Amino acid sequence: MDNELLNETITKKLIISGLNDVSSSEPYVTFALNETGDYNNTVNILVFIPSSVKSFDVLGPGNKEKVKTDNGNVVTRTITIKWEDDVKPTVEPHDLWSVVVNYNAASSKKKDNIIRVIYEYGDPETTRGTVTTTGNPN
Image (cartoon, rainbow, N blue to C red; front, top):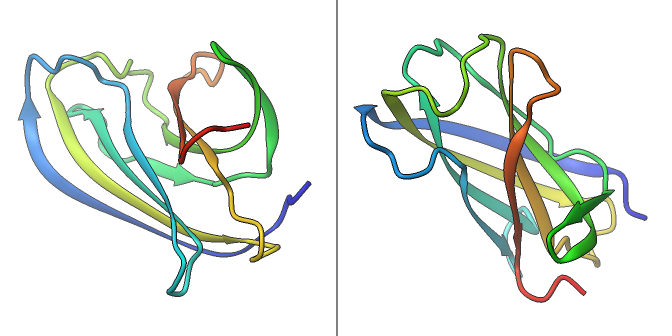
């Protein structure tokens, strides 16, 4: 299994502050395989961070691991949106952030086709997130 990343870039940009009545605080994710350019994997994430959270980190993508989903087990990398405050992602109001993660897998000939994005806050045992594929994961 490909467990190494050659390089990565992570950018964060605040889009809007103070949103109320957000229908879901789960991350919204698109995942693209790039045929050209410096990186062969691009993950675009819209995250709703509670406005009371002063800072957050973006960790990963990590090594590939097996993850159980509603559609069975898949092998994926995980990106973690993490903050230290013990504030649940559902606490309003929210700030909407755009996060872009570009990376290359160690084997540039094999590109990832599944990515998982999770929130981790306060107690790391209470993670939540989204699994996104670029097509059929099998």
